[in-house]
Length: 150
Image 1 (cartoon, rainbow, N blue to C red):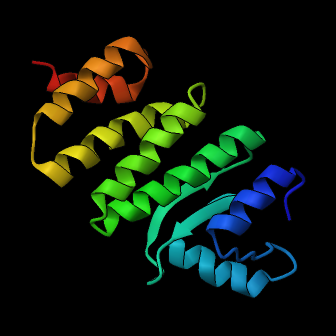
Image 2 (image 1 turned 180 degrees about the vertical axis):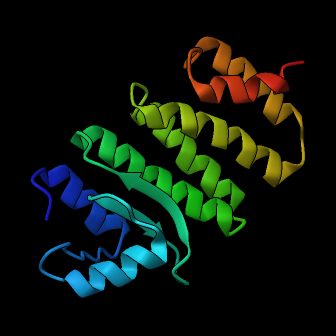
């Protein structure tokens, strides 16, 4: 399904992939596209067991960036389920494994939010704002976290 074996391995380890082809499965694509608001191909949706969307990837990405985005989906799904420790671990792993991807900055933000939600300790947010002063400074995620500075 994917030309890069690293992507295939990651998907096989973490997901139950379902592919709906825009031409070969036109009716299914139309129905699911309308249901999930898919406006472009490819649109990759990370859904939970109930079919609720937890993360969306639109358009093509290089393999490393795509894997980082798929990993974000795992973190967002854990967060939505209230599994804040698992979400924080997943997000921090993305920051460490994919520091040059767009997903790294988003993951740092959500790691701090996950820690705060899991502990109720506002220091988690201040720590995250400080972490943004050291990396990802020019991102929208750093701007969002800037309100947490003490």
